[in-house]
Length: 321
Image (cartoon, rainbow, N blue to C red; front, side, top):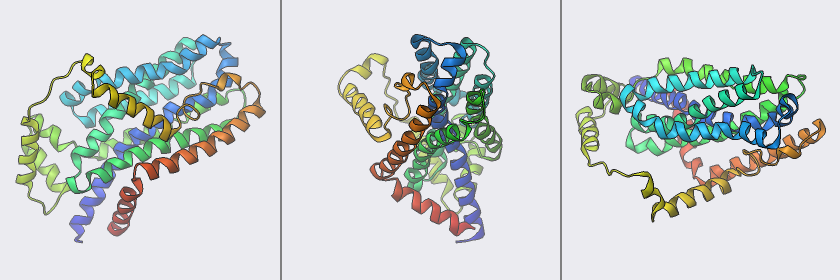
């Protein structure tokens, strides 16, 4: 492998891993609320209804973010929108930590939800657009692993911060600002998506990016493939179509599979956290969640065949050193 080829592969992995930090923040911000529940309930004197709203506000934002990020991503570019999402993650983490009322907490969690939804769309999209077809599945798989890693980091940081005093829940939220800041900084060192550059009418810049990412490949052929894929007829679909066969079946299958693989009811969504009232009970629950999360991580790696994707990536990175 030549020096240029190694440098290009390293840069491609840098771009992919940087984008996958959006997936890590997806998992972290989704799960971090679980560790704070007994403490914010006591601090804000929350009823069951208000606690449910404080927890689910991020999911409401997630739905809206995932449904609306597409057009801005096409207009302004994946890289710029990922930077904006990183800023939203930072605002959400810091704002949630500094909240003095439940309304502030809900508002900042909603902002975090917008970032979660946007990252769930743009991070894998960006990775797929910069990677060549032969390793595209392998690199996109990094984003899936990053989501689970984010959940793991959230529970681990919650566990470490539980004894930091009465404001421990604030530090739990604030911890998310660290990977969010790293995500924002690293985004300045990655390239724009060549597909977006082509769509934006910048074919020469797209050519430069493809040349840098894929030295030795036929750039004209790759540009032709991008052009053909853009010109393909796009099937217009409205919301009601999602509830007709076969889409309704697929949605149900996706929901069922995601819950069975990730263990969402028992691990990520803190539906049973209202029963946790004492510090000892919370520590016990944290231990149980760590075990469940590790089991979920192993199941995801095995079921999604991520081992076949991850090992070649690690091998390629080591070979480029």
